[in-house]
Amino acid sequence: MTFSRRAARGHEAVLLRKKPLGCRLRIATLCLALAIPVVAAQAAPESASAARADVVDVAVIGDSLANDLGSGMEDLFRNKRSVRVIKRTRHATGLMRDDYFNWNAALRKFIARSDADAIVVMIGGNDAQTVRVKGRRLTRFTRPWLAEYERRVALFMRILKQAHTNVYWVGLPVVRSDKMSRNFRTMNRIFRTQAARYGITFVSIWSDFADSSGDYTSFGRSVRGVKRQLRKNDGMHFTTAGTLRLAARVASAIGIH
Image (cartoon, rainbow, N blue to C red; front, side, top):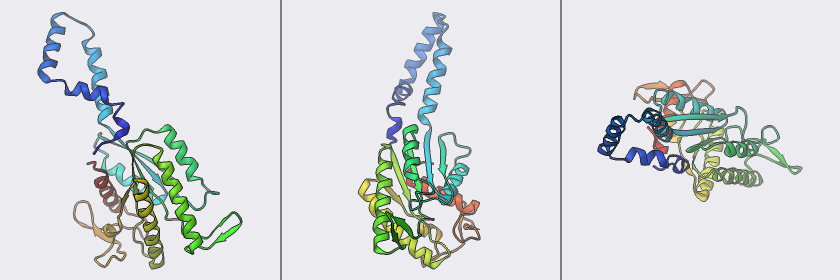
């Protein structure tokens, strides 16, 4: 896939790499013959530029579930210099309690300073709560609440699009609580609909952590294909094996290995 944010910055390095091998050897031989002392000095920047152009920066943004994802991606790519993971996560936050933590402001600040090749968002696990908007009490999952939540998701996605890079929105997983799982299904529908509207890739992980009936299970196949406990005892967050499985699913969606 193409990572647009690197295109301009890596253009010169790409051209250097595409120079025919025979041509590079002839140039090197000529320089040695003429005893030009700057050959080594020129070789280092070319190599450094090529290395920078080959690195894919992936920013992971969101709540504690996003933190699990980011940790899994760090583990997944720990020995691969081609991918650099940037975690911008904060526990116990979401889109409904901007009085506690304003994700819109934090995202704008991050985008202004970042040139990530891909942004991955996983958020919403703390959003199923009643809130007050302009003095009006919105009970969770009533029609007014859903309309307000959809508005907030859409606003967040509009801000994400200002980054002019590849954006991936990871859906919420099935959890132990049946009621919370139903809530997450509803929220995932909003995420999916708004992602399609704004040209953002929605990544569903529901079936990756569910049993054959689509219900919650703590166990599943690890990235090695071995049965492991993938979810923690709280019935929501991920074990180390689970974070790796989650990271592999998202990495596949992005197209990085």
